[in-house]
Length: 224
Image (cartoon, rainbow, N blue to C red):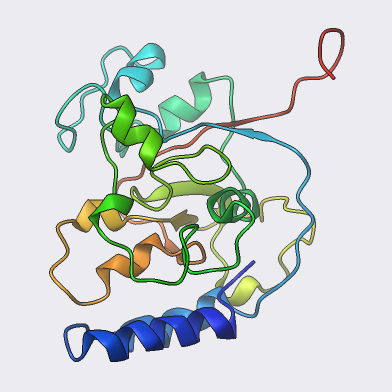
């Protein structure tokens, strides 16, 4: 978990290949917040294929309106409604470790597709087109990982200071951790916007957020 030396070298290689198109100074300055690389033990869990859509949020919050979404099948961005949703639905937020584990899908590269610079095929915000949705799957069958800014259960702590080693969320007062968000600034205008797709990119919650539900693995009769 975290930004490795190899990943940072891969970003530098992309920067050299792109010439002076991108200003990555702010990324490298903030990269320390996703370091050092650490080993975390993650127990089995179930996570949604994609962030909740507008239609899915309305299942629990019928009056929900979304000024960011183009359709009911688009990713929902919650702001004032977030606490209402968390109090109503039968799921939980992923811990930051669970989110990164799911995003990486067994890889140790910048994104689940490797160390190349991501392109627009990585960004997905609407799930009505099943063919396009399926084409964006990682090895775990998850889609749109990194597209929306997805909230985690953890309270923000830079540098993973005193973070649990068993993927439990860090608790306490303060803003929560957010992962992803590249789709919220797409089409990219240069700078370092594409870096929000990286599996290890992390920052504090700001105004609005998407939600990818997590549930325990079923146990008992009928389940292996």
